[in-house]
Image 1 (cartoon, helix red, strand yellow):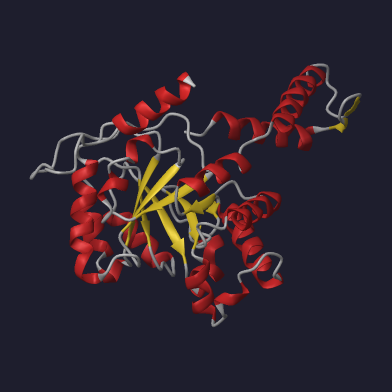
Image 2: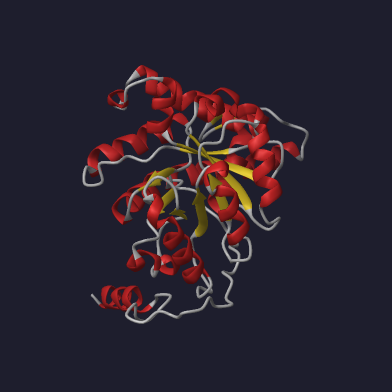
Length: 316
């Protein structure tokens, strides 16, 4: 019981501002410390008009937090949302989450948003409705060199050309916007169901093309927040396909995604065993052999174990 009390104390006392009743009138001078180890299991979307959610960015369990300036914000309130993001970021010193700001399309205010945000402490900009290399180059030119570029894959042009879009190593991540993509393709959103062959194809192509380009793929957001069983089923299916993480709407989905996309105990023990025994045999000039525990082991199996161990250790 004691640990629950401690956890609750931390939850209600580890916030950016002690109270939201009287916020500062000016931006602060704090910059979020960069993360050491990074994980990519959950990417939680936050609405920057919700000050309570913004105030808890420094205590979230989400591996990534995306502050959304795009389609969830009415045009008349986009400047207010942008100001809120800047205010809270400028008073936040630490967060265990990788912080991303999702801007509008470059020609719909996104360019100005990036230019304004560059001086603040966060980790990446995610640009909406990207179509081609020209827009990637434009975003990179605008973006401060200490920040990553992420994209929302929501257009048929980007879907077709994803494997060619990484013109710079700062483009690290693509987030699948399945509903906008279906609209762009002229397909109904009603086909977003488990085991639908068209959705499986879209997920598979997105995953393989992103990996081919060296881009991290994050799967789409499941909008039925209270339907945790279906969300869990999507996560399990996507992990089976090879995904490492999923967009999330809130803490309930974050908890499920973090659990499912974590490396389990069996996978970890197997990877450690294969690494140890392969390296011992390789030192004797033997790169293929039978192992009593896991059968035949050779260099490709060893490399897969290294990939698993790298994932569990986090990435710089």
